[in-house]
Length: 391
Image 1: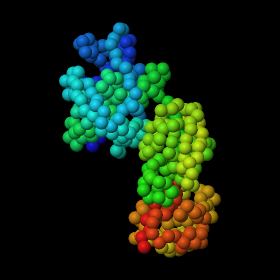
Image 2: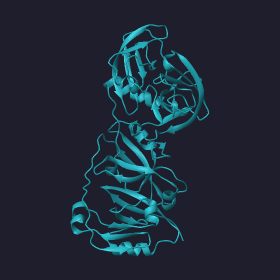
Image 3: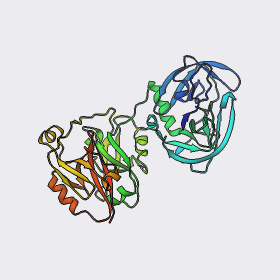
Image 4: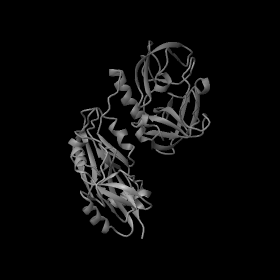
């Protein structure tokens, strides 16, 4: 289970934080203070101050507080991008209320996403083996130079206690969020306007890549920054503003570091070539996809394990789709790939499908073995799947 460290928000709950300026600005986790009626900050010299919230940011799980004090000692942020797997790190916090406790460990991995936690789509965590427990949330993670390179946030545990797998928010993310919270009390993030997924081995083979990498574009929102910038369905985004995109989760993380209106450079893999694109990030999504129930007109069988039907003229007119619909699904490559009855097939083996005759022609010329692509529209959303053909 993935757990935010102090799971219970109750009277007297304890979390951690750290001073980032001499005039009393404090960083901590959003989940530590989000539901609090009153917040108090206890310093190492036992002074206690009432704190007020300057800003909260749930997507990054960060919060900025302020206490009325001056001439305070504070810590400096380091460069989290310079961290390497195996580097030693030190966490300081108040596990189970045990104030100012230190624990050491190493960086286990970088660029981790949270399994099953869509809240943190804009986050790419540092994974460590530091013993982190309830009460450590919001505390600093230091490198050996004494710079803060992370903020402790989550643990992976089946018991609620430390299991040697903990996650910290990178300092470079925290600095960006802190500056916006301090200036405006809120965080603005850029929007690209694509729906994407991981590039697996099958997709890499189909699209001629040397190895799986990047973010596969399943759909481009109408009139989105991506659409205006020339991003196409089935593009594979491999670089954004100079940052390599190894996994699809890297893309929202990097896009989220830039504000709306930022002109951004992208490299995409398209038709066997790398192409350079420029997009201006937006701030809100658009979605004008119409969905209606298809009408079965005529059916045909095929060697992929399903039967298809033509789309009715009404469905073509209302949705703008050209393709064929899956009318019956049997054992075979289609079912194994995850196709469903009702899916509308718009391309097969990277060839556009606009009729049952075209589908039959393409299907009859498929290779006997290997992977082929099929692009479908399901409930108004397009996606590309890989069918594995066996001799």
